[in-house]
Length: 253
Image 1 (cartoon, one colour):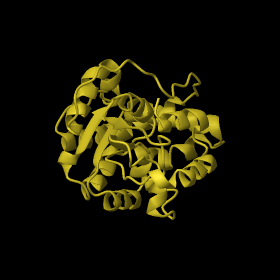
Image 2: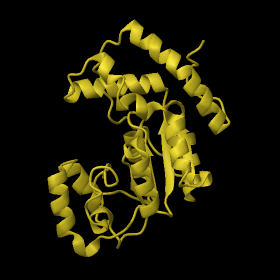
Image 3: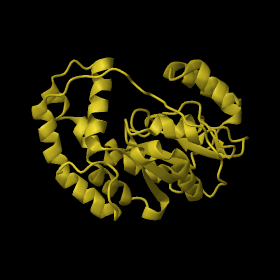
């Protein structure tokens, strides 16, 4: 196991400790990511990242989610590059799923790392919303259902809008879009597509399940009906943008 993986396993997502580690490692760090997974939350970004870093040609970061372009953009660029080892070969990845939450973050990301490739993973929007809502309620938000579903959770799930913002700054050929449902159904086929996108050899990867929660919260039938109505049109827009059918059940059926 390499040093970065040991650090990630030992101290997890503790930002204070991470910053100290970066300072201590300053002499051997300093590399921008080659690949960014900028979204979307609760669509399988952690599972995808865990799959990818088992590939011998891919280098893990000190932590999966760096949050540089949203939470830590006041830090110098050296703070960001400190998450990867410049002395080690391999494709470097930043998998922070909130980078697509704002066009401001997208612009920062694309201007800072102009040669990066992007992998965006999507999921049935209603299941994504409910999963995100469950996580929010479990962690700290004691918000009403009405308030929760009228804020950033819905904004994140407007996939077509978020992708169009990304495409303002990145050529479409540098963006690989995949779907959670297809990764669950046949993870190896979907990973091989990613390996082809990155120009690396196919490697057999064992099945992983990350961030899987067993806790569920009740969503009212009224709210569910409203979400179904909302995403009928959104699904149509996304299907047209991508030029393909979507893998989840159509909400208007």
